[in-house]
Image 1: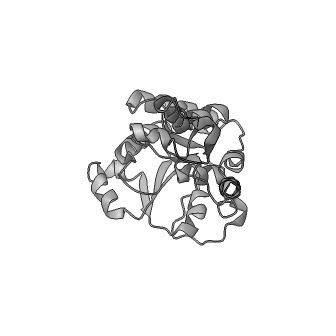
Image 2: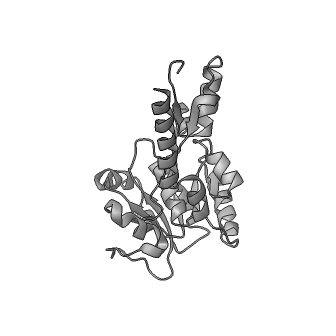
Image 3: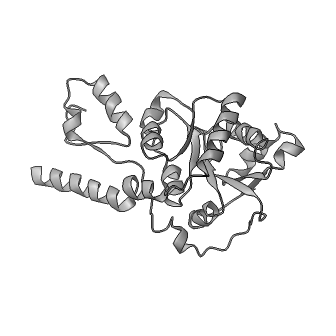
Length: 242
């Protein structure tokens, strides 16, 4: 850290932690915050052309999860939350778009036939993901709140906001607290409990009554073109030094 000419942090929270760990190094001056960004031209409701194998029923209230099952992601907690939400939203459906279908099938064995009825899962290519996101009312994912996740910037977060979806996730991960409180990006849960699930559902239903441009969050903070410009600026500065 001391000898680095430039430092990249995916999150403001990560930089703050580095400054506390290395107080004698001028990290503030040589660090750029560049989160995991997305192609906002591809993840755009106005550019959808991919035909899908799955179509929800007209009255389904569809919430979507995309990506890996397990690892850092809390799949069972997510499903448990949706089971509780179904008490308040009877037509709720959870669509899981993942290539880890075998792992998901094992997870689903822990649930009753009735509970599994609210879940549908599909495999998809990267190019198909925007069209699947466009089917949903909101996106959901929970991340294990480990120390390393101070620096976490999930690409799926940028993708969901680019598709104008509110996000249901847990607090304390990366810069979630900033984007959700300042930009009102969705619902943050403080713990994984039935009480918190019920409370978050009520907050979500209230959120749906208020118009919000979630895509603007992606355009302002997570646009791939912005990331390219910031990296290019760093390379140009390093070249000038040499």
